[in-house]
Length: 229
DNA sequence: AACCAGGACGTGA
DNA sequence: TCACGTCATGGT
Image: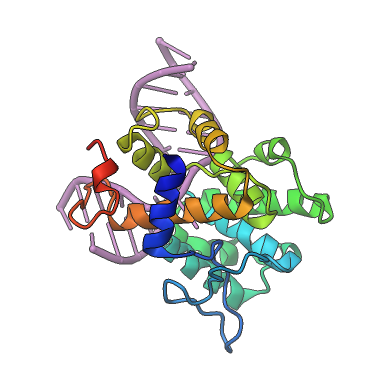
């Protein structure tokens, strides 16, 4: 049943190509459209250490914030410096905060980024464990799992508020089920496939943004006949 | 003009 | 554990 939902969403929206990465091909980093700068149906990203790090930065900046706002913040950062641990660390604190301001919580997120940078540097390009990530102040379960799945390509499913909402409406989990319960449900009912996990989470976000909002818009929802709303 | 966005953390019970 | 409160900008 769960896999059927995945297939319906994939059929409806197509491969999403997450994680979104800045597109450096032009003179300035751009990424305005839904797909431009993404890499749909290409699963060999990230290809560089800089891309791995950019995903981590984005994962922190997007906490409780729309990606459009994070995109502005990333572009601001890219305008100030190269988005690498040393590049970001060289910024004046106020410059850093101003750059990420569009993503909100700029005081907290600046602190989170600086703490994460030190952690990241200490890894020397080694893949961190989930426990290590969670030990960093500002890195919670969703952020840690996003980093593991999208930056490091480990088969770990990411749960977010959308996932909880959609899966509870489909009757899969309780409406206030714990993070790990939802994660285990998915990972026990789908093949442990990186591509499936990456796409499924991205598809859930896309579907939620279009239909399964706090004020749901069910008219054209492809999952209507499976929904218990 | 409220409400919400791809959360995480601190606090008091 | 649980239930709130806090953090903050910008789009709808």
